[in-house]
View 1 (cartoon, rainbow, N blue to C red):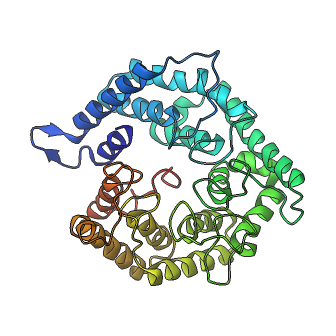
View 2: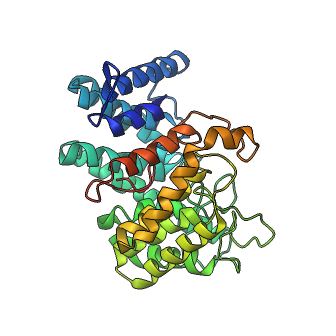
Length: 360
């Protein structure tokens, strides 16, 4: 429900749905999500939750709630939800049991802070929040150094694991973490060499002969997947961000190669969601289009969006699987709606990137 609230926030003020604006619908969804969550959880500063990512923890719920209430004009509630993020969930970031990855971990927490900054501006960055961000950033770096040493991977200075496994991709792995870190240039300067060497290792040294990336590092036996969470599409987002950050053509060249690979692979059969579906892969093309202005990439995104509009008949024919959460933003039809909203109201000055990672 929080994901759908975010979807309707994206399209609010664009059009009316019957007598209700999209903002009103977003507010109803977030109130329902908050009620459901609060009925099952009792937030307490004395209880540490080891999940603090935007996409798969209550951090996302309260971030979206602050966003919705701000636009509804309820600044008191908006401020309260932002305060809850800092007062309670910041504890999770420093637990030894908390991962550094995007979905559940510290990188997702940093994404949430940058998301709020993109909405509210400098007003949400008091000195204590800046200090918290720096501490979380440093904890991610320390975690990467420790894992690289413990697992004896001398070829890479930073290495992160999820459930003890060195994932490469955007969801649980190194690509997602590194992409978020590059959104904090002031913090990156303290570890510039290690971060860049790790970016290059992931993008150039971990690519398989097929042109894709395996799920786990140094595992040739592993099944390769072509989707946001594991494989080339998530790597394209890191390559695009690395190009914007380092201004080196090799990153853009790689991003273009990945886009060609994803298009030639075609629409995947897991549905139309963002995480492991057709709409998520389409953001490979839009991210490269923003940097190159080559219209073929925009056309490819349109073609994938057209496939998304055929989700019902393709599912009935058995061409698409039914996702675990078929209507959700991240896994289901909500992701296709997000992509179509981006394309329907296309404005190069407004478009930011793939939701949940590069739209900040």
